[in-house]
Image (tube, helix red, strand yellow):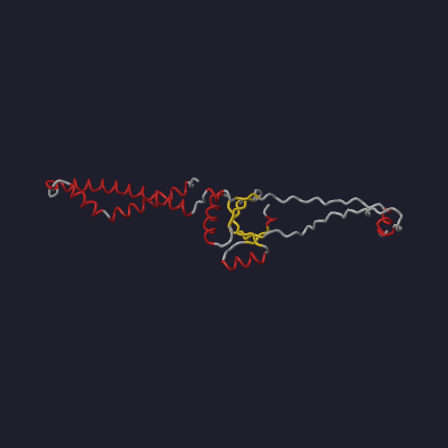
Length: 226
C-alpha cells in the first residue's frame, strides 16, 4: 500500500527537522572528532583552524543527511506497522448492494364448487363401502412475508471516500474495541467506505455499547446501507 504524497512530504520534513536539531546538538562533538583525526601539526595553526571549520561543516552535513535518512525510514516502518492494514484486513471489506424487493406471491383463487368438498368430514364414507384409501390431502398455502422484517444494527464510526483512511481507522479501533470492526462499502454513497462496529441484535444494544465505550457514531440499520 503506497503512502500519499502529503504523508511522504510531512515525513521527510519531520526527518530533516529532527536531523538538523541533533546535528546542532552534536556540533561540538563532531568538531572534536575531526580535530582528533587530523595530524598534530595541523591542530594549532591559524590555517588549520579554517581547515578544521570546513571539515567540521562537511562532517556535520553528512551526519545530518545520514540521520535524516535513518529517521525517515524508521518513521515509515513504524507507520506501516501501526496504521496500515495487513493483507488479511484488506480482504475484510464487504459489499452491500441494495436489498431486492420481494414480489408478492399471488395465490390462485379457490373455486366456489370446492367448498362443499372441503367442508365434508373425512369419515363421511360409509363403513364397508370399499373406499378404504387415505383421504385426499389439501396443500396448505405458502407462508406470506411481512414487509417489517428487522435487520441487524451497526454503529457507524466513520465514512470516507478513500479506502486507505478507512483501513487506518479500522486498525486503530479494532485493537481498542471488543466487538468486530469492519469496513462496509456502499456503492451509492458519496463516501462509500463506512467503518462500522457490529452487528448488534437491536438498536438499544448498539446504543448501550456506544455509551459504554464512550464513542461518537450513529446507529444504522443494515437495510439503510444502500
